[in-house]
Image (cartoon, rainbow, N blue to C red; front, side):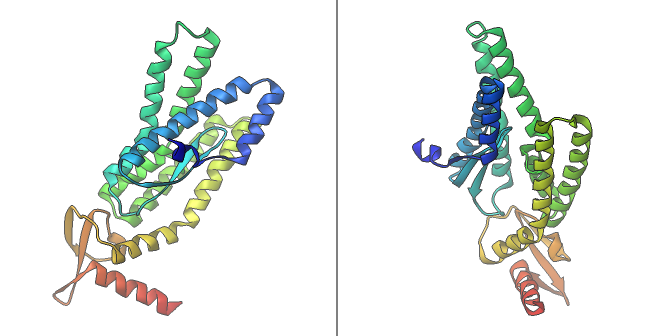
Length: 257
């Protein structure tokens, strides 16, 4: 447990909001949100440790957090979905726990915890980068589409969801503006990293050995490669393994550079 606590980092903006809360008399509110966000992240941590992945850090923001882990892109889709759902599971457990204490808490405290827990739960369900809802949608798309196409489709879903979210919640207060700016920044940052992630995906496939559930011998393009599927390319009545095809692809990119 101590090793996990050492990996927790509080974002600088969180300290700013703590200071504002102190000055405005909302320290109780920010403390409740902080505990809920930490409890949510510990839901991810439980399954990350269960699947023996390495945790790099847990960063907490004024309205949420994320857990960064060291794992391969070509890891199990099912395990990654379970990790993403872990935060929701913990928040549901928190709902039940708080409900069991309803007779021992003041009405104001009970309503604060219940409402904040509900808002954070719903917020994280949204399919917007980098929220858990987006991660789950992206992983589900990877089950049925290529890695490349799953990214493109999930970006489209994220952008449309972000536009709807902005229209729905936008008001002239700094908290909502901060959330909107943060989400826009993360989406743009993720799109900028798209080529890097695709190249990393290909290099992993070339250098690593993975357990594949299916074999596809009708693949026509590198962009059709899917997680958990091994691919063969047909050329001049001969089949080329995906490792050799990736090698050719990466070599051409290197020569072009």
